[in-house]
Image (cartoon, rainbow, N blue to C red; front, side, top):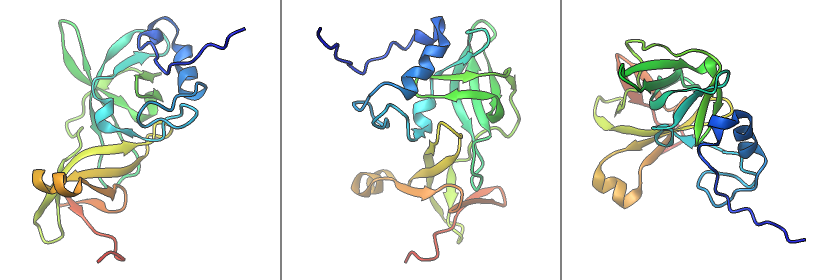
Length: 194
């Protein structure tokens, strides 16, 4: 008997027919050729940019509810508040998916147990980051999110084009180094850095 070789390619439409098979692909198969995946296929962290455009599917009915178009996060908090979902069809609108309603947060699909809600007025992630002196330090370009708990680990801050090309973007701890003060995101460097 010949062994079949696993290629690591997954059919992205598999969740439409059998949503329970998708959870198996995140935990059981060996996939080391994809970026951000560990040895057993478990995703360590997802960048918020990778979530954009991913389908949101109801776990109960299997229907596609829309696509992710934003992440609701407040700097200084440990978890995301929810996802902003753009619904399709003739009555295109933006809706809100709370963190408590997310059943599975993956790189191919977001599965939900609850309904989409009306978008809150303050649902977004502020991007401009200031120093304690009031100077513009950079902009938040992406968040690194743990898919199992929806906890934000780090934030990627772009300072300028030339600085990013020379040194790369800066990575800071989102829950400890960033905080909101006077409707601004303030960067507080760790005390042991120079």
